[in-house]
Amino acid sequence: MHFLQILLAGLIIMLATALGAGAVFAFNRIGSALYAAMLALCAGMMTFSAVEMVTVSHAEAGHRIAFATFVMGMAVFCLLDRLLPHAHATLLGAEMPHAKRKATLLVSSMTLHNIPEGFAVAAAFAGSSSLGWLVTTCIALQDIPEGLVVAGPIACQGVPLRRCFLWGLFSGFAELAAALCGFWLLSAASRITPWAIGFAAGTMSYVVLFELLPDAVRNENRRQALAAFVGGVALAFGLSAIFGS
Image 1: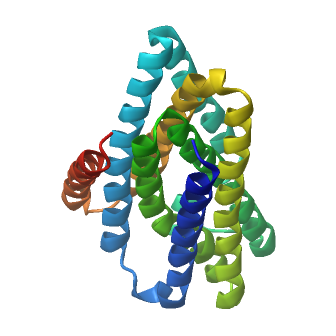
Image 2: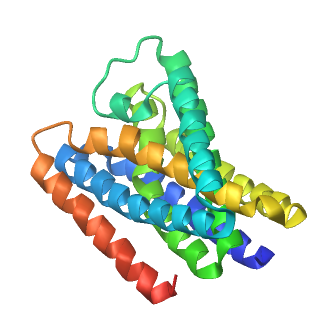
């Protein structure tokens, strides 16, 4: 696991988040069908990546460690989801009382939400470079709609678009910081790498099952969303073959 790889991967996911946040300048032109398809495509790619990570964790530490850390990752994210507001539902039309307070909570929610994703990148690279680039690509594509999830609800409250974009960029920076911290942690304690990979797979699975897919199939675009999900799995499979994971 090389520092320059982690740095480059962290910059990629941060820029992907910034790209999504930049879409706030065309916020009114993004329809629900396109947004749902984007979420479903990312869900499919992250599902494949999570399976790959569990496989690596199992191969290196056995089924007990792989299962325990996977469940732990899902549990931590479940707790986070209960403590903080659900930003995707807000973007799709939920009411937001107390606008300033709500905007602050949304930014905090998505920033904390992005920290485990940055750590997942570091954990994947600790497994292998090919797995690291696969996970980085999948998370980067997923971060494009995530960037809009940060900036969009704030824009609905009348906050200037430029400031909305900066908040989205800040949430992406949290991923970069988490990836670098994960690198230093796993470099100092390489024995916990299989644990970290299993944990990261659990957090990614929670995002897919309770964040991305429910929002993707929320409206009348279910068939298109499911097709996009399958397409995401196929795309991730192709990327895996290219990266040699």
